[in-house]
Length: 452
Image (cartoon, rainbow, N blue to C red):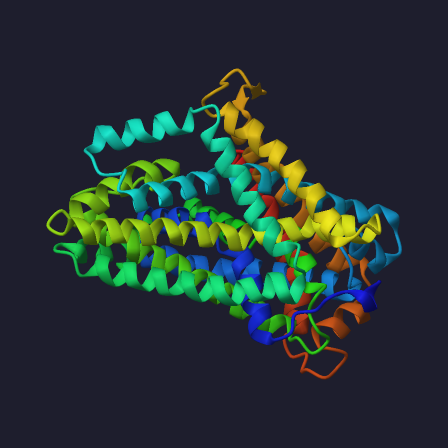
């Protein structure tokens, strides 16, 4: 099976595709907000420390599992030790990514609706109009479901074409477009009157805000931002060539992901402060606050405001798509290899399953509020289930596997490409994955539950 599998054709394709899996909607709203409210540049410095102490070693570990196994996540985890029990970690990652894709597509569908509305000029109105627009759309029994399914189908069209012709080719188009759109909006935002206050709010270090809680927030952001625990890094690594430098790739991907997150802050905060609005976090920022910000900031140039709004929601759609492609590929690769089914049929299986999840999540958000699990609407239930339990568990077990159960020589061979690369940092990596990463992931888990 390994000899029949596709591979990324270029180093650039590896970086863009894998970074794209990490870059998502969370980069656009969560990181800027957390940075601004946790010390600005001081938080960014703490975040960098967390990236290199948790994020990069965690990524390398998943890369090792994936490239060594050269197969879907379930089989790759089982092959490293020969124990069928470790395959359960792969199954966990596949299930996690499938659930995430289901509810993530709902929010991505909202972004597609807002992109369409921006193109049609339907978002023009006062603050109450924008609030009512989102409320009416999200509670509609049909529209949000159709947009969510449309987004999953768009993802399907990329994945079904394979690794080189689908995932890599799409990443080489989507990621540069995403960066160009982001830079255009950053420039436009920073040139607004009073924008300096927003830049200062984001980047001026306030060390008085640093605390243990800020460290835990930075740790959690580093963990979730890089898609640890979803099996997407493992799956993508199974398509890496033997010449790929795993450590260098992990560092490059982490830096690109962080750069995009910081640029997102420079896109949002200057515009918001120019009209006297401090952005909040969550869906309300994207679908309620920012439409008002764009209208007020560019009130003297309505066409420019509409153009910025169009580019912003196009940016969100592209960011979401780069993430959903990787999540879809995890399950597609599993069904393709384990069931020995054609890739097209395997992709359809996952598309249908995720569409069903998306419909229930969408309906629970408005049209059918009685659809609840453990007191939560289905979307938030799926979000909390994956973020609070499944992701930390998958990442924690991966670190234990690579650090303690896989023979040290195998880990060393993968880290150094069978001795062709210098292993100067190998001992530091092994120490991190054995001791530091499990401890930090456990701390993220406890922080998510509100225990610490």
